[in-house]
Image (cartoon, rainbow, N blue to C red; front, side):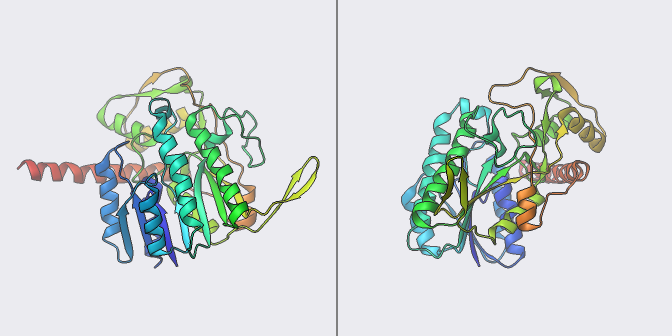
Length: 344
């Protein structure tokens, strides 16, 4: 079983590749190692993967269609998990072209490479809970309308779902999109709340609480995300009947969408309180209004995932935050030791 993980040096990509290697899958990874956040963190993840037997890595940007096509044709993966993307809602207002190049051009390049002479059995790709926009109906269901994105990032993720469906219809490519809900855990992204808050509390700096704390997030631990990906990866979708008001339409697409979230939204202030208890330090909170492109609540309905795979995320926020804080302290302790050795 040969699996290509795009974004292998990223947060979720690293955890997925590490799990695959532990279970004796043959892993291929690509990543462009961009500087959206700390490249040294990405390299540290990559070092751990390269130390494992059975892992092959190449620095490739999905926007480079020729290099990507050569890599896929050369290695002929059985499965592809696309976790490479330009992330971040707020950053999409500062650098929109980064999202077009990575999330749109790059995704089409990957689909083009996938439908050529390959042995591909299933392509799974990361979508996002952001596609639900300002939806006030909770929990969010994959049957809800998602045609009113409130950020460019969300628009690119919804576009990925539509583009994947069209390729599946045209070429019979089995594809599954997973709408992730606020992933956190060890080796996480420094731009996300869990990491930002932990670092700020540790350094005695203020943390910014948006919408004056009136926020809920369906925080989902990274190991649950990886388990969900693997459960889905081995279940390529069949053709399905699409029900419309005018009657049933048989779609040729082998395409499926799932929510992958904890189904237990946590108030942001409660999240901070648990983090304070875990760290043994109080946070200096600065309350701010809602930010453009943000939403007050995310909440995943996961009935479809449970029905089809028998899996539902279950890691509690207390357990997940404790694991993250343990990792954070160990990692940065080692970083500080390494800096001291270099300075000496």
